[in-house]
Image (cartoon, rainbow, N blue to C red):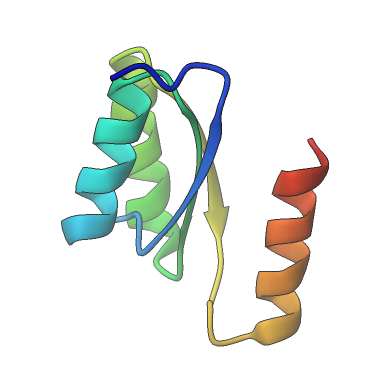
Length: 79
């Protein structure tokens, strides 16, 4: 499937299922806004996906912080 030109938000993107989803979405052409509370692992994961040709942007974020989550989503949507 081809999702070029679309933007995806993936939380928990530094590891596990979130990372797997970010990889697949990027592999299929989406620009992926990756969010995770673990900033170090998030940046490492984003660097790996980017090195493989994916368009990703890491966003260190605690999704339990509602105002921060809202600002993140609104910021991504505004682009």
